Structures are given as C-alpha cells and as structure tokens.
Image 1: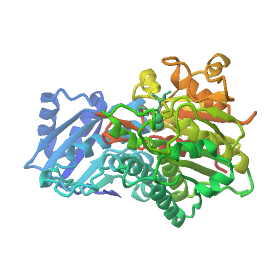
Image 2: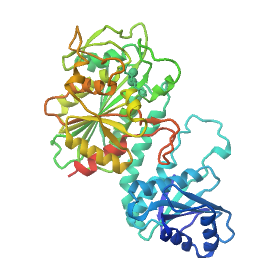
Image 3: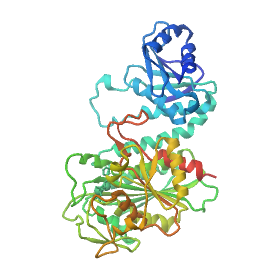
Length: 491
Ligand code: BES
Ligand code: MN
Ligand code: ZN
C-alpha cells in the first residue's frame, strides 16, 4: 500500500474523520458542501454518532468526483489517542481493501502528527499474507493501492511518518515470519533470512550447533536434537548510541519454528498453530529492523534462539538431564516445556557477552497465559517495578497492552528437582505461566534489570477484530519494544 500526504483530496473513495458528538459530525457533513444534505440524511439514517469504529458509506454519489464517500467515527475529541486515529483509518482501509476502490483520500486529520498516525493505521490495516495463494478470485484481491492523507502540512506529516513507516516494516516482517509455514521457515532458513538484514546496517552473528556445543548450551541443543535442522542462535546488533561502548538494552526471543511437543507429543487438533511458536523471535527481529530503519540513537542487541522441537529416535526424553551453559542442570520432565530450555541458554549468553543494562525476553511460552489473560494482554513478569512501568506505558501507547503477574519463592519451589538443580515444569494445573517465568529467573544475574513477556495469547489471535491487525499473526511485540527504546533509552 502506498501511503501519501497531500493538500488535496483525490481518489475514487473519500473518507471524512468525524469526532463523536454533534460538532464533529456537523463538521464532517459540512466538509463536502455539495454533499451536505445527502451526508446529513445518511448520518441520521445510520444513527451515526462518530463513536470510534463507526463507519457509514454512501455509494456512487452523483454530486462527488468520488464513487464512494465515507464518514468514520474517531470517538470524543478530548479522548482520541494515537491508536484511536490509527484504528479509524484502519477500519476504512479494511472495509475498502477488496471493494473495487483503488485510491482512498482520508480527510480530517487536525495536525501533521495525527496525519502521520492516520497513515500508519492505513498501512497496517492493508497487510495481507497472500504469498502462497495462486488462485485468488479477482473480487478477493486487494483493489486499493494507495491512501492519501489530506493535510495542510504534507511535508511535516511525511517526516513524522518516516519513523512510523520503519515501525510498520518491522511489524510486517514479524507477521510474515510468524505466518511462514514451518517447512519453509526452520532454524537454518530463518538464520539465513536474518543474515540478509545486514544490509540495513545491523551487525549479524550466527552461532551454529558446533559453536553452541563449545559454549556448553546443552539445554537449547537438547530441544533441537530430534530435528534434522540444525539449531541456531542469531545476534542482531544496532549500536546507534553516542557511546558505542555503553551497555546495550538486550531483547531475547523464543524461536521454536515448530513445536510438536517432542516426545511429550501435543494432540493433533490445532497443532498447525505451533508454526507460530517463534513469535517472540519474530518480535525481536522486527523490532531490530524498525530500530535500524529509523536509525535509533541507542545501543540494542537482539538475540534469538532458533530450534525445531520434533519427536525422533534422537529426540530428548522425559527423564533426561541436560546441562545448561550457565552450568545448572535440568531434569526434563516434559519435552513440551521447551521454550524455557531454549531461552535459558540465550539469556545466559546475552548477559555474559553484552552485560545489558536492561533485558526483555519475549516468548509464546505457556498455554496457561491464554487461560489467564486471553488474547487481550501479554503477561509481564519482572524483577524491576521501573521496567514494568516503562513496558506498561509503552504497551498502552502502542495498542500492545501488558499485565503484570507475580513471581515468588513459593512458586519457585515448584521447579525444584529430586535429581538435578531444577526440573522444567511445575505442578500440573498450578500457575503454569508463573513457574515458567521462575525457571527463566533462575538464569538472571543478581541485579540485572529483566522482564519476561509471555505472548502466547497475543502473537496470533483467532478471529481478530482489531482493524490494525490481520486475523492470526499480529506481529505483536515490535511496537512495544520500539516505543520502549524511543521513550526511555535514546540519546
Ligand atoms: N509453545 C507452547 C505454549 C503455547 C501454547 C503457545 C498455546 C501458544 C499457544 C509451549 O512450548 C508449551 O507447550 N507449553 C506447555 C508447558 C507445559 C508442558 C508445562 C503448555 O503450555 O502446555
Ligand atoms: Mn511446547
Ligand atoms: Zn513452545
């Protein structure tokens, strides 16, 4: 989708943004003098109040150059957020995407910053993953190819839009990675795709099985040993800070390209969704792309552990004891609790190699987080109230909200083992998301500022009604990470 900013509304569809309440709706009606009567009648007929998400559409108005005119509610003037503007634009784009309309003009953004946000909403809503469709009926193909946001300060809006476009690219990449089928995206091909990102100015390092064996990453490697694909650990570095030697912020992502459960095999129905079990890594890779594209003035390191969890003659068994790179031993009691086994070695490497001033990991870690929070919030677990506050604010501003859950010694005792330093599961049906977080915390150095985001409920969503997101892969995490850096860690 081409996003433009211009002073004149041109296109075969024109959408007016209207505030909730009489003033805003009056304003929208008055914008098109020739159409005023028709628009007023449509507003009355459609009980249109301008509430966020409300849309009315007038087809083929003879009084207009456009073949359709739409009025879109943005909600009350005093309370419209950036996300509110993005969603308003997104609902029009969603509605028109395959309608036959080709060019849409959106009128009513009051300033350049809002115009830029309208552009971002339009772009995110236009996202589709059609790569593998060879026979899409013409009426199901997107017809809309350009959105022009009408504003008096087009040049200003264009420069405000540039960092938002970088963010959108990161989100789109994350969505693509999560949507890719697991025969195409596996640890080796994924590492190759990450390597290509060097062209953005990111420094890329790829550790293969031999390199990780040398480092003693028995926990991560144990998960991948049943796969014919070699496991990988990829590092993406963006050193955009003034002082290139200053401690970076680290992002760590779970990249299980397919999670069968291993020998503790998952049930068949729904298993195809486990191609998305690399959603945490996709968020990290997408965020690194966004940060590099907008040349963020901060040092950031992204690390992703890429493995495929398969049952096989060489797969690890329940009962196996593995040794992590940190030296701690782990009794595997369920091979399906594999995400934590991957992350613990990557978290160790991130701390040892980069001594980060703050570290955030993202993982589709537990089904239990969906029981707790559904698809609305990601769970956050942390040893730092300050980092939680920063993540909560960033998530709210970006429409990726998080909700804190506790950590504590009582939960931690659940993962003690009779035969090793710890086991990889807690008690069945008992605080599963928290015990997973406790496991990770055992690998966090004393004094290290750290947060863990469990995104099992947000990385993909069935029947998603958020107009900014497609159904299924959301790209969740790119936006909150980008904002976390922008608002807290840039020079
Ligand atoms: N990848 C899953 C978690 C998951 C479940 C993500 C549903 C998205 C949707 C993870 O590896 C897993 O299997 N966790 C187990 C842990 C259990 C064995 C302690 C779970 O949640 O059932
Ligand atoms: Mn699993
Ligand atoms: Zn998993």
